[in-house]
Length: 264
Image (cartoon, rainbow, N blue to C red; front, top):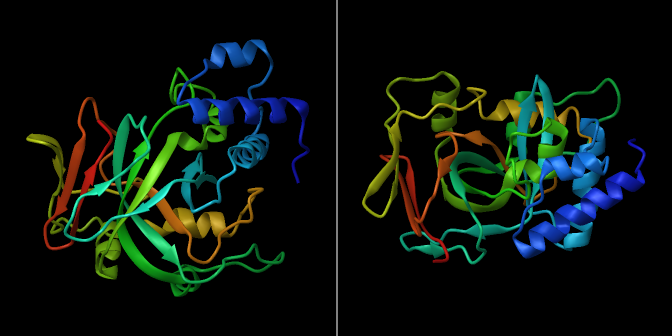
């Protein structure tokens, strides 16, 4: 278990304050105060301290791989899209959007005893549904993601909020894992502008891969993977800058779609 340091506590409070004020702080200033976490473990501790100060429950996890090592950042603001209508995300401050495949857990996935591991099959047995989702991005760091990775991780991998979209068929996930060229293009639009239009590719090919990897190497301080949480594992379109856009639509022909209104 990572030892909590005074620097961890101070950085957690700074990031929580930046979240509350929708402001940012420079990595250079943090470095001058010797507050940049040196390891992934210390970054995970900072996350937990910041979340505790913010005072919100963990609604899910943003999972990924850093040089092959699984990492996790908590999702705090989760919204459910209402089918066939526009969902308004009330929280201001988003600078980007990522359309993703995500999982809703039907049961807890606790850390297993030494020598035991989850398999892809056991992970999928614990999944209630596979959904389309939209992650909104914001940064509490002036340099955004151009900082040492542990600091970016401490900033919850730049998560602003997450919108849970419609359930999709399991075959879509399998097609992504196989990079099936017959998948239809994903279209992301803002008002009349096309922001993305291409056959989507998952950064790890298989959307289950980061969830499987993290389930077998959990190191967060916020209770782990729990029933009802939403787990997202990577963007299908990269990070798209929003600019002045206030209405975003995503259409994946024959698979699903989303229509989201942002604060003006």
